[in-house]
Length: 249
Length: 308
Ligand SMILES: Cc1cc2nc3c(=O)[nH]c(=O)nc-3n(C[C@H](O)[C@H](O)[C@H](O)COP(=O)(O)OP(=O)(O)OC[C@H]3O[C@@H](n4cnc5c(N)ncnc54)[C@H](O)[C@@H]3O)c2cc1C
Ligand SMILES: Nc1ncnc2c1ncn2[C@@H]1O[C@H](COP(=O)(O)O)[C@@H](O)[C@H]1O
Image (cartoon, rainbow over all chains, first blue to last red; front, side, top):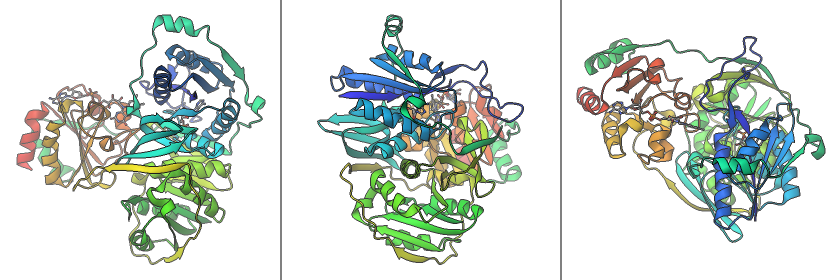
């Protein structure tokens, strides 16, 4: 079974972003970029499936600017066999990404597609669900456990009230939650080897997909800052403040 | 304008989130219908009919919608959505699971986690873990969006909508429900609680969450956690507050043994009053706390519980 994983280049999760002075967007100049943490988990899961003999090949795909090839190289270093870069400098929203991935699914016929549940820049949490709808494949979102069993996969999902397990026919689409696995670090020899692994480069036009969306970004602002509070010296003072100043007790 | 709100169910009952989504729909303006889809949902439908501002509750009561699996729910919404200019759901795990399918099948974008309605086509949403707020305008024919419930005050239940059965039945051979383990608790639900007390890695182990439970019982609070506490196995995942967990905005949020990473702040910094208890006086959580108490939580919590 072939496994396709989608990886997105995003701002590093440790970086606190700044909004541009003209409020047109967030400022990404000279900001550290990385693979979306949920995509790292997706790659890890795919590689583990290969190590277990369930998957035969792992293909990583990313849509974005030329620099997204860095994240694809990381995926290759982590154990993906080959990569596909669909290059565009336009802001590709989830729907366009899902349409492109649907074309790739058509072409590659994977048994399983693994995506992150959410990109930590847009916080959209949509692409996997859209891909499932467009390809007419079942979806298991927010997965904390994925168990392939013959022509089925059992997915345990993190839902608001607890955990839910569903069974899906294969091929299927899975999106990862944080506790699915703990991603490994790439080792230096693997990073070297990854440089020689194959990477295809295409464009959205090659797939006949229009990247532009009907949603326009009018303005980006910083959220209201909380004013710094005070330190209290004791439990008694805390209770007094909560009762008499904040009036929340 | 005509708006369809997909209702959230919790064990077959109408979940509190829906009253907040209806409030967002009212802010857009126009006719508001609520869709209840599930199995054995009469009580939920009756509750939804009372939500102020709702004109009609459409009820799809069929085994295929039990557990609100994504594939049949998406197909049902596609059948119904043609009558509406907007389709809304809460940004719950159900809303997030289902709504993007509708958007994709209608070839429109979805707006996630809407926190303000500027007009019928312009909305604010939180991005980058709440560190930026985007104002976006949608020119799509149907606006499909999930709503952050903490950003809209619930409507009252003074309404009296009509009920209408929906007889659309779709087939589902792709996915099936296996089992569910829902956390059982007598405490209020995290998303709707007026007071939330959360513990982090500093709690040391799961057993020590007892120290929070005692206080929670006195305050009628819900108990939450940081991701580090969940990852370490102290408490189950449904207690995680943050960018990728639950978003809360209670009147009072008490963070205990939590450092204040941006991903955690994303889930609680809209709380009215924030209290932080941490032994490290430089912990970033103090930058957002109205009242900070520096010290050992193992001494502070028992004292706090006895004095409340
Ligand atoms: C993609 C991604 C998504 C994430 N999503 C979330 C999310 O949704 N929610 C979330 O919370 N995190 C999330 N995180 C994790 C986040 O980055 C932090 O790692 C996490 O919030 C840290 O949890 P913590 O504050 O409990 O632990 P720590 O950072 O280890 O802090 C523990 C604190 O406890 C204090 N302490 C220790 N002992 C005591 C004591 N005896 N008395 C008093 N204080 C004590 C310490 O001083 C310290 O400040 C996410 C991370 C990633 C990469
Ligand atoms: N530009 C992209 N290239 C590759 N994968 C993407 C891209 N955008 C989103 N994805 C995938 O979809 C997941 C969820 O993203 P989103 O729905 O945008 O929050 C990510 O974790 C990726 O797996």
